Each structure stands twice: as structure tokens, then as C-alpha cells.
Length: 109
Image 1 (tube, rainbow, N blue to C red):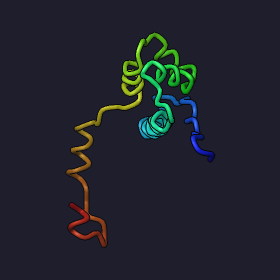
Image 2 (cartoon, one colour; image 1 turned 180 degrees about the vertical axis):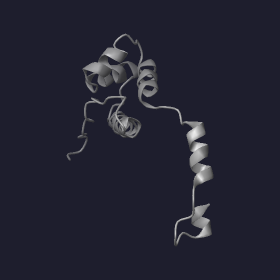
Image 3 (cartoon, rainbow, N blue to C red; image 1 turned 180 degrees about the horizontal axis):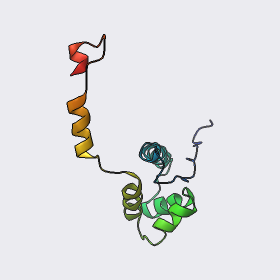
Image 4 (cartoon, one colour; image 1 turned 120 degrees about the horizontal axis):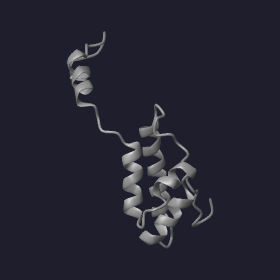
């Protein structure tokens, strides 16, 4: 890449119901933030909102089109894709975990 050249992140066209939605969104978000943070002249929050609109698909644009600031739009997207951890299921996994053959005690805990 030439000096100052940046790669724009892929357009967010992801279903929140997809099996890998949270992980895929977190990856997209990291790429998007890197894109914003590598600008020679950092964009303003208002410009960030315009850039965000250009990096989302139709369904996600519909979700954030009425927001008036970047933080509100990002909060909507995060709320749409990042689901809270199911505490009951997490406890079940923890209490039913068994040590694998060849796994040391330190690795198990």
C-alpha cells in the first residue's frame, strides 16, 4: 500500500440470527475502528456516522437511519449483534467439564 492508503472494511451484510453473528460482528467492528483510526486526518464523530452509513447493508441501514449521532448508531448495532452470555448454560459447561486425556491439571483449571 502507498503511504496513507487504507483498505475500507467490507459492508456489514450480516444477519443477527446467523450462528457466528457475534464473532463476525466483532471482527467487522475491529476492522471498521481500525479504518477510522488510521486516517491521516481523523474524522469527526459526525463524519464517522456518515462513514458508518456507507459501510452497512440495507437492513442495518434501516436500523440506524434515524440516529443522529455515531455513538447511538453503534449502540444500536452492538445491541443487535452482541448477545449477553447465558449464565445458566455457562455454569452448566463449567460444572460438567471433564479433564481430557493428556491434559495436565494446570491446563484443566
